[in-house]
Image 1: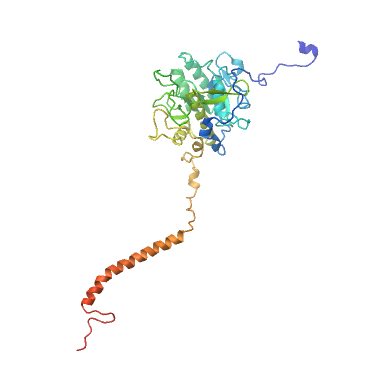
Image 2 (image 1 turned 30 degrees about the horizontal axis):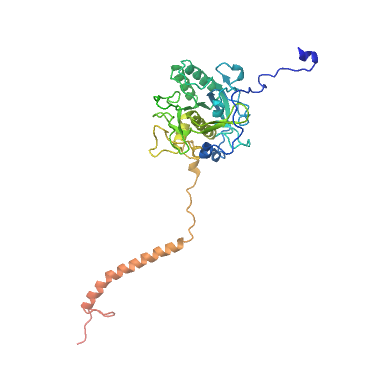
Length: 387
C-alpha cells in the first residue's frame, strides 16, 4: 500500500529472482594452500579432458548454500523435504551439505586455493537432514527414497548420498529405480565410533551403489570408516576442509568421515559422466574401480579397490566405447638409437669371430691327421711319388 501511495512501483521479488537464503555457520576467512586432498588427487590434471560440464549432481543432505563465492552460480533450485520448503534446499543450518557440494563442484578461479573436483558440474540441493545426529528414525529411509525419486525426475546424472540410514523397502525400490534410469549413485560407507559395533551403512550397501570408504594423508584406512565387502572404493576422509554456508570462509573437519570421501568420488563420477555420457552406472563404477590406486591385494574390505584417481578415471582407454579410440592409434615407434649401427656391427663381428673360431677348432684335428699321413699344402696324397 505504501508503494502505491508513493508511486514508486515497488514490487516484491518473484521466487525465481529472490536472493538465495543466508543461513548456517560461518567459517575461517581463507586458505593459505590447497587442502591435502586436492594435492593428492590433482583433479586439474583431468580438466583438459573433462570438467563435468552438462552434468547435474544431486546432493541429498542438509541443504547447500548458494551464496558462498565457491558455489555462486553452481547451485540450482532444489527442494526441502523438512521444514523449510520455501528455501528450495539452499539453506544449510549445519554446514555439512555445503562442504559436500564444494568438494564436488566448487568453482575455480575465486582467488582461493580451493576448487571442486568437477568445477563445471551443477549442484541440485535436496535437504533431508535437519541436523547431523545419528538417527534410526523409521521415517528417514522414506524421505531419502522420496528425495532420490525427485532427483531422478529433475534429471540428475549423479546422486551423492553422504548419509547413512537403516534399510527399508521404499529406499530399496528408489535405488533400483534410479539405477534403471542410468543415474550413478555414490554413498558414504558409514562411520563408527571407537568400541561401536560395525554395521553396514545404507544406501551404500545396496547393490549398484558405489560405496566409499575413507583414507588419510598416508593412504591408509581411516579407523572410523566402516569396513565391509560392500566397500567399493576410497577417497580422502580425514582432515577435510570445505566452504561454510554463511560468508566467504571455510570450515575444517579434522575428524572427517566417509561423507566427504563420497563427495570426492561423486566429483570424479561427474567427470567420467561428462566424458563418456553413454556409459551405464555399472560401467562408470567399473572405470573408477579399475583406474583406482589399488591396494597390493587388488581389493580389500577397508578401502575397496583403493583411492580414486581422477586423471586415470577420465583418460584411461578401457575399451568401454563402441568404437574405442585405441583402435585408431598406431603402435608406438621405437625412438632413434644413435649407437644402433655400432651395436649392429659389434653383433656381426662377434658372430663372424665365433664362426671362425669354430672352424679353427674343427679344422685343427683334420690338419693334424693329414700331416700324419704325409699331406702337404699343394700336394695330392694319391699322386705317385718319385723313386
